[in-house]
Amino acid sequence: MKLIVGLGNPGKQYDQTRHNIGFEVIDALSIQMNIPLNQSKFKGLYGIGFHKGEKILLLKPLTYMNLSGESIRAVMDYYQIELEDLLVIYDDLDLPVGKIRLRQKGSPGGHNGIKSTVAHLGTQQFNRIRIGIDRPEPGMSVPDYVLGRFRQDERPLTQEAVKKSSEACEVWLEKPFLQVMNEYNQ
Image (cartoon, rainbow, N blue to C red; front, top):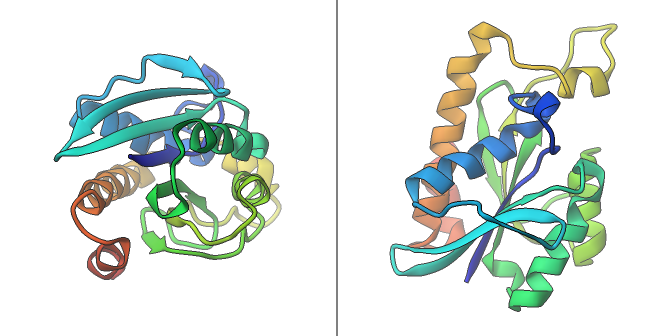
């Protein structure tokens, strides 16, 4: 079983915000893979289904970003999912808007959702897709920026990033993550 997790914050007020781009990818995958997010447990909203012969669990932790690891750990423990079968998708301030970067390990880099995930997994070695949201303009606080919405001119870039990220997830079901990284990191 593969576990694909998108990080974000629950609630309508956070829909379409920079910090919730991981949720957007899970929503896209839910539609593409025909896996409804219709179960609520493990402090998250999730769905289980099959795609390309692989059993898939799509998860949106509902713990708020800073506690995302609680939900991820609970799902992994319950379903006995191995680290190499986990893929976490989240926003990244250090990449330009719409750029995606796949990695197999790395530090949280100030991202509280990843800090929580690392703390609950006990390792920085897990597959991830980082989606660029860029840095705020001087004078704007990071929390206000990440909880803000994308500008109209940025939406086409983020929509393309969501599309590419969901494609990369699907390719991962058939190929090793290292190979997927080589295809999508350009």
